Amino acid sequence: MGEWLYLVIGVAVLAVVVIVGLVTVGRRRPVPPVEAPDSQAPDTPGSDTLAPPRPVEAPEDPTHAVVEPLEPEAPTAVPTPVVEKPEGTASRLVRLRQRLSRSQGGLGRGLLAILSRDRLDDDAWEDIEDTLLTADIGVAPTQELVDGLRTRLRVEGDSVDVRAALREELVKLVDPTMDRTLKVSGADGAPGVVLVVGVNGAGKTTTVGKISRILVAQDRSVVLGAADTFRAAAVEQLATWGERVGVPVVRGPEGSDPASVAFEAVKQGVAEDVDTVLVDTAGRLQNKAGLMDELGKVKRVIEKQAPVTEVLLVLDATTGQNGMVQARVFSEVVDVTGIVLTKLDGSAKGGIVVAVQRELGVPVKLVGLGEGPDDLAPFDAGAFVDALLG
Image 1: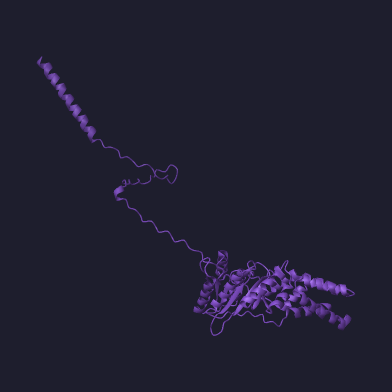
Image 2 (image 1 turned 120 degrees about the horizontal axis):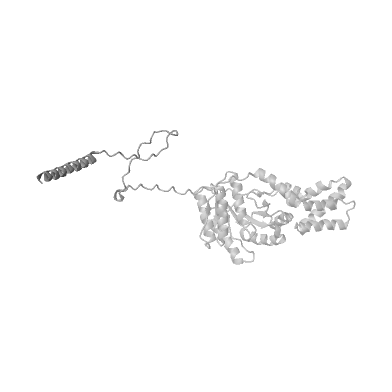
């Protein structure tokens, strides 16, 4: 019995020793390191080269996050208006003469066809008169031309050059002796002041813009006065013309006193020592006495700053004899010194040049033959007659 007891105790002790040994060995066994996954493919297939382990980034602490400042947006660039270089007078004249010749040659061809007949009887001369009257030359100038031609043909007989004779008589009617110079310079250092008048639709505002281009092409400094304050569109249109050639425009609120705007424009021209001030006025109907009186007021107010050197009446050449009525009324109010004939192409009748000069006793100084910005040129009597004759 005692032996069995010792045997059991010995077995128990041995079991305890074995268990303790196994636990101790398990604790000492090294744990193999965990390798980072391969972040890069090996250089060659089958290569054992491994990429270095990727560092573990610490999580961001939202309380200590670094906020990078936003870069300020660049200011939006405002496009600078492109200032145009207007066409010179010489090239403008050549182009307009060609266009005038194409549009006005019918009158000359009709006259030459009649004058080339074998026999010029009374019926032929009546046809010539009708042709001239249809071209809006007017009764008195027509009679002068017919009388002059009949006398030359009777005196010179068959030796006469019909075309040359007709040209000379037409040039006389147009009168090349008239002074067609634009008075755009003032005296004693004052700017020249050009007042542009006419009825609505004749093209006043456009004419003012085109004249400014002629002056800029001559290297003259210019100020524009937008005194047509009753039409916002006219003010904006003039501002656009000024912007295109770099010319300042003096304007006032819509419906303001036109005389005050004209006054301020001339005042600025005097202060800035510019060469010329061009003043656009509202289109006046010749049967509106109050509006016509207001136009006279504009001229009087301007002259408190500087004398008006030129008053240009803009007439639509297509209006024919109706334009004569307009011309007469305007000349009584503002003492017109020169005429601008617009739309002298297409259906226009060139004889209006002769008629309006006879009516007012003042010259046609500028003619417009199109919608282009440089389709305005000084009037030349000889070139105009040549265009009439084709």
